[in-house]
Length: 162
Ligand code: SAM
Image 1 (tube, helix red, strand yellow):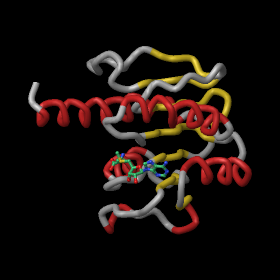
Image 2: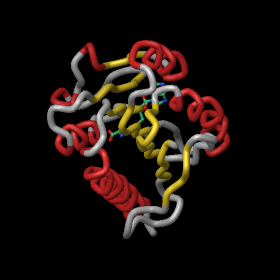
Image 3: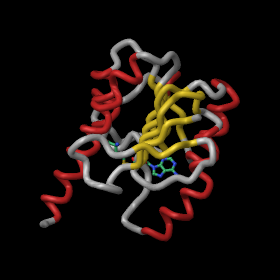
Image 4: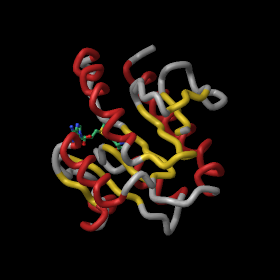
């Protein structure tokens, strides 16, 4: 698989997972959290899937497409390790959906990040809500679900919060 093939497959899997969750999230109250704005592609997709829903975003430095920048009162700027606890103190464990897409190609760094990222996000996650992550996150309260149909194994990690 070329790097282009791999990129396309990853984007398709990401979109398929978000689309798969739509009916479940529609049934749940509570906001959505986007962890890592990047270009704003998945933020824009979330806005399209869930119009009118509160979507809070974490990003250390905004560099997204100008049309995909969240309103200031829905943006937690800075290092996620500090801003996620700040958000949890303000909003509580209310999230219907957390989508996290941080990390790099450095596997060891991603594993180290997962050690604090999972527990930090757990403080935002409502019981019965969902977490979709681009890396494995081990949190006792989260039950891993199978990949949605057509999504390759272990490309994305889907959890339901007990
Ligand atoms: N899902 C996004 C999209 O569709 O455009 C792409 C997200 S991109 C892969 C990851 C983003 O997370 C980058 O914009 C980066 O600045 C941000 N980021 C990475 N680590 C972070 C951290 N520790 N705290 C805050 N933001 C972080």
